[in-house]
Length: 176
Image (cartoon, rainbow, N blue to C red; front, side, top):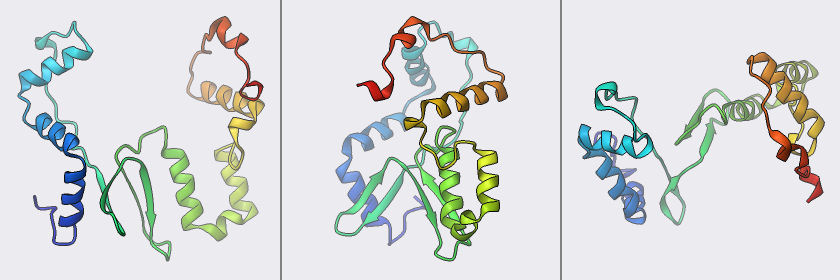
């Protein structure tokens, strides 16, 4: 309740009214007892035994609400990068900015906050050293994609995936 201010009251109210099913769901999650939570877990892992599990609060879910001109508050499901015009401060906002999106978001941050430096050969060289595929589309370059995957597997010490015959017979993205 302490996060409610006069400036965000209307956007929050608008989002709540526009997303009543989500509000009901979130309230039902908050009201669940430990036993109810364990029963929910068993929906995903039926063999779970209560004695093997301990309830642990891992964090608090945060949802971004954006005040959009003419619409009021809208619920944001993606990840948004916000930076000051001077490039002295930046923030990452979103429901789930996890490992799958972090590198591309950080590269976008560097490009937005340091646009002149990124254009320099020194920065371009360092970025390509850190991210060999920097500035190239992997979706349209199967050779580079294979090289990047092989390098990642080697660095992370992962086994070669066994994709089976289906992967060998599958058409390349350009063949459909």
